[in-house]
Image 1 (cartoon, rainbow, N blue to C red):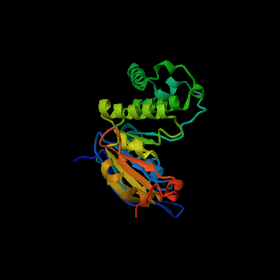
Image 2: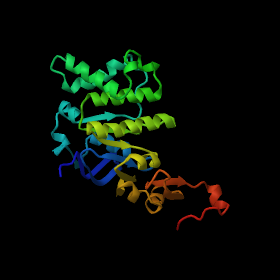
Image 3: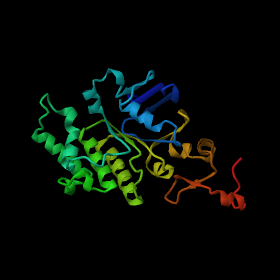
Image 4: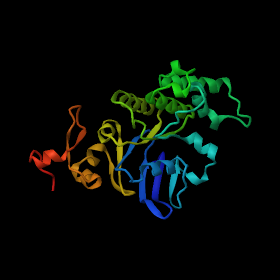
Length: 272
């Protein structure tokens, strides 16, 4: 099977401080793949390595069956689009301008957009439902609107793989669901492989085909949400008592953190 992304024995350090250690996994084409884990577990670093923004000294990463180091920068940008957690708020550009930046890997030597490029940008804005914002400046948008603009820019790249670092962070519940529904729509209609980081394990459980659980830069668990989201897997990683039961939405795990006051009152018996 040809994987969209394959990571093998990956190690990475910042100034001799280990961040990722002997990490191996693969992502199938068209998969919705979500990376979870506590703060400091290496999630953002992993996303930047897969996107080619950082270079690993040990181990390997292949994208669409080719070693990431063999790609020219522009060629890699045709394969992978990256949406960071913190999108700029002070861009002196309109929404249409920002979305059009996604065509950069496809433009010729003079960087001139064609009618086809303009059409791709319009399609990306229509797909993300921001066409009505095309003439607005980025500093005039809400957080959820800005996030959709940068997703539209990523779609405009026409990538095989889209990487998102906590795209729902700091958004209210309604905007979180719109972003996640948009990811699901991209996977279903555009056949884009989605790799994203999320701190919300319940949101991840509802959408992910596969979860990767990290602890201290190492792989703690990898598989379908029903296998990964158990208290046996989660409590040692997050270091707090948790309840895991079935979601009322169906056969999905639901994770509930247990406040100390309920334990102290004897309402909950912590798992041993």
